Length: 273
Image (cartoon, rainbow, N blue to C red; front, side, top):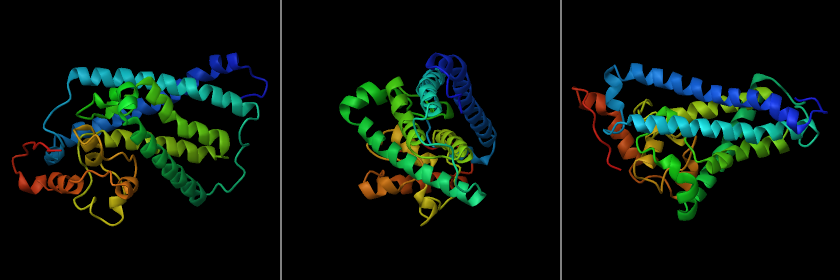
């Protein structure tokens, strides 16, 4: 929490670098850890779980890293005044509720559910023709997802993506530990969804419980041609209820997760969206 007499100029000068480094650090750590995991996985028999036969190019990586860095800058620019507002009494006070692990876990679950709803509906809005061309097309330049595409947004979409955490911070009392855990899960799930490799076990998408969670295949289909489907981030329920789940999602997931036993040579197989 900032001192209550700090000016916006001081907040920008002292707080902005910390916010930028924190959010940039989340992105760097998550993408590098996921990339290291994929490097190891792709040198085992699980390389047959690579979803697409197409490979991302050097230009794809450069674009994704550059646009993600710009998004981190936008997030820092958005959150610096939020912290200044909170230090001047705008918004809820410090968390005074229970702080046990169960309470914190439930709080994180609520954050994820709310954020998933925000992401689904803003994502669908961004796919309307006018907004797609101006705000969301940058992200869809990534046809073959890589972990570095996690924040690869147009600057306007980055503002939209920051919207839910900003509104939450300014309206709802929040335990810091739960919010930081939420931010960690958010970036980890984002890079996992853009990993381009299906690491979930066979039967995951068809299971009554696990099938409520998205997979790398789920989001990969959204990038590789199923633009009008699979809008969810963490969960599949909005896509199911609203009829926007890719019609062949489970079929394709079953095909990908069966490759180990079907293809002894380890050759990649393209997914037809």
